[in-house]
Length: 224
Image 1 (cartoon, rainbow, N blue to C red):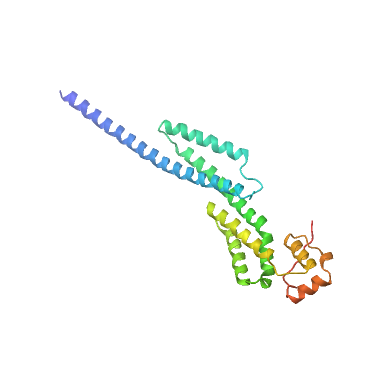
Image 2: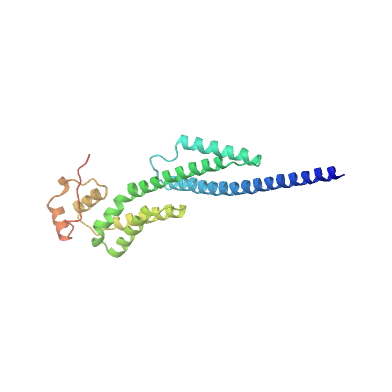
């Protein structure tokens, strides 16, 4: 009888510790599941941003490589299998965190490239021509809004739409420059497209530059 009670006590203790182990495993699983959910949300935002950039005709040079896609698909499929077995190891979470972080860093660089590549023309033109516009303060404010986006990160799809909206506003303002002389207008057009050369600096253009105090603001660069 005593032996039976002792054995039962041993079994009860063993069952208790096994239950505790299962409870810890459940807590660990749920913790990793929450981390996975966060990374999936980050990935969804990243993919949505690329889709919005593409829709707005803002195309970074790289976008997502086939290697990035394969790595992400592999780790997501692995996660799906582990979830179905209620066993989500730490190294799986660490891997998807690493893959998503790498992709986000690439996207950050892509965003800075987009701003630099697509905005340089408008921003530089607004900076040079602001004093000639009907509302120079509005032009300078618009220029600042576009420049501020270059240093902003992380961004949301609304920031991409805001960028293209401000770019369109800038082009409308610049297209409405009060210049009647055809050769001056042609020079400004070339300047905005970074195609102006020394041969464009005829007497009329030089006179217009001096009259508007633009000598220190217009720069011609060597082409490669």
